[in-house]
Length: 219
Image (cartoon, rainbow, N blue to C red; front, top):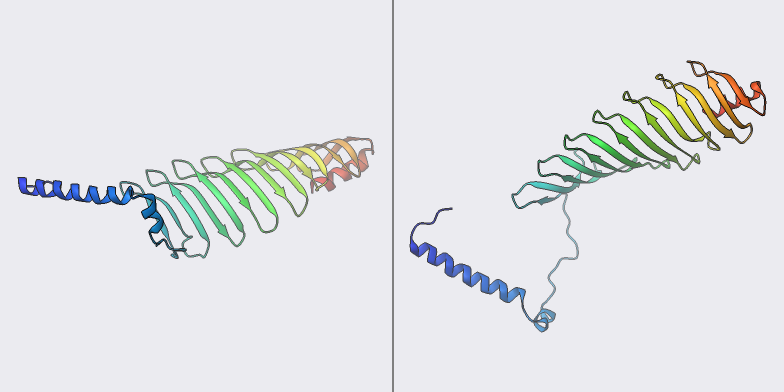
């Protein structure tokens, strides 16, 4: 703002000096005076939304509810106004999502009330490339690697809850090769056809028993 006249400048200078002295006196009051001051801070503040803005007045974070829901959420934005981090709690459970500069979700962490927790790494199109899933109720866990179409192609984890193994799948998601150690059938290598049906099995239980064991563990 442009000020006209020496008087206006002088008035502002005097006012600034007075305010500066008042602020300095308040900030640097003695310890004895500070102890005698009455604490006027509120014990709690209630509202439906809290906004955090930067020096330019741009919204950088908000504590609010998801639109049209009763789900509380914390949203953090970059200087361009893009959402970069999003923490929310819904009826299904809490979740945390990180987005890139194009506002695309790239990393998601979720815990569901049914005991399943997961971490998903996504590409720019929203397809999960790597997923880590832990199922507390079933007692199993796995790491899945997917192709660019979102189809799981490699799985490493616990099959049927008690069989550690590695599974390679085709573009249709059907198992092709499985290597694992099953509690009832022992260790084995299984080869499947394009439809996922076991065709070859190498285990100490014999081909027929191994095929049934592979089918049970993978389904």
